[in-house]
Amino acid sequence: MKQSLRKHLLQTNSESDLKRWFDPLHFEYEEEEKRVTVGFPHSFFAKWFESEIQDKFEAQLNLFLGNGYLVSYRENGQNDTNGTPSVTTVVKRIDFPFGQEFTFDTFLINKKNYFPIASAKEVAKQSASLFNPFIICGPGGSGKTHLMKSVANAISKNIDYSTIFMGTMDDLNTLYTIQFKGDPFRARNHLFYYDFLFIDDFHKVREYPHFQSELVNIFNHFYDNKKQMVIACRDKVTSYDFLDDSLQSRLGWGLIVTLKEPDLEIRVGYIQRQCQMKRLSLSKEQILTLAQRFTDFRYLQGILLKLFAFKELVRKELTEKDFQHILSNTEEKATDDLTPRKIMGVVSEHFNVRVSDLTGTKRHQHIAQARQVAMFLCRQMLNTSYPSLGRSFGGKDHSTVLYSVKKIKQMQEDDYDLKQLLKTLKNKCRMT
Image (cartoon, rainbow, N blue to C red; front, side, top):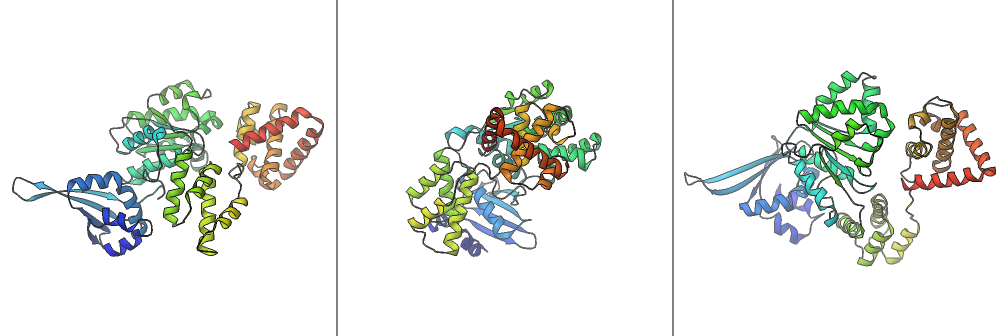
C-alpha cells in the first residue's frame, strides 16, 4: 500500500520531498476497517508533520483511497513508568465534505492575511467557542468562501459533518419559505439541530429585511448554547446601515476579520502551485505575465485550465508562441459570473427599493421604472431569453419583459440622463 501511495504522491510532489517526509513514515492498512495508521519516527517529526504536511497529505490520501476512511497518527514517545514505550494515537477522518480543494494548506497567505488565517485555525480547533460569531469580511475574490469551508472541513475531521449547517443567505431564505413552507417554528427547530452554523453571502440579508428578526432568534440559540457560528460577507459588517440594531449589536460580540484582495505575490504563488499540481512548465516571465494580467482567481483558473488542456491534447511542449496565442484569445471579462440577481441588486440599490419589489407585482411608478431598467440591463448584458428573464423576475410573462426592454431602449435614445444612468449601472454590474 505504501509504494502504491508513493507513486500517487509523485504526481504532485518531487522525489526529494517524498524522501524527506513520506519515506520515514510507517503504515498499517486495514481494508475491512477502512483505516490507515501512520507511525512517526519520533515526536519532533510528528509535530513538524502536523504543522507543515498533514493537510496536504490527508487530501491526497482521500484522493487515493476514496471517502469513508479514518487515519490514525501514532507517535512513539518516551518510556512510561513500566519502561515500555508510551504511544499517543490521534484518530481523524480524511473526508472533505465541503470540497477537497478547501483546506488551510491550499489557502495562500502573506503578511496581509496572516491574522485572519491564524484566527480561522483557532476557530477550527473548537476552543470553547472563543470567537463566536467568527465573521470573515472582504471583497469578492478575496477567499472568504475558501476560508470558511476550510474551517468546516477541519472541524469535520473530528465530529460528524452532518451537525454542520453550510449555506448562503439565499439558502436560509429558501429553507424557511419553500422547504418548511413559511413555518418559522419548524424551520427554526431544524436549524437548532445543528451544532455549527456557517452562513456565506451574509450581505444579501439586505434583500430579506423581514428575516432579520428571525436571525436574532437563531443567533441567540447558537450563542447561548456555545455553538460556533461562522459568517462571510462583503465589506465590513459594521458598515451595514440596513441591519436591525439588535442584530448589528450581536454581530459585534464576536471576532471580525478582513481579508485583503489577492496581491501580485499571492497570485504568483497560486500560479506556481497550480503549475506544480498540473505539471505545467511555465517560465518565470510567463507566470508573472499571468499574475499581472489576471487579477481575479476565477479567470486565473480558466486560463491555467486552457494551458493545461493544450499541453495534454495538442502539444506536450508549450512554446512561447503557443502561450501568447492562448492569451490573445482570452480576456478577463467581469460579466462572466454576472447573474440576473446581481443586476437586480445593483439596480435596487440605486433606486432605493428592494429586490423583492423588482420581482413582485407593485406598479408604483418608481418601482416599475426600476424593474424595467433591470430587465433591460439583464437582456443587454446577459442576452437571456425573454421567457427565462420573466421567470427570474417572479414569473412575469415574456411579453412583459419584451415591452420593458423595448420601452427603455426607445427612451434612452431621447433621454441623455437615462442613457448615462444605464452606462453607470452597467459599470457597477461589471464591478460587482
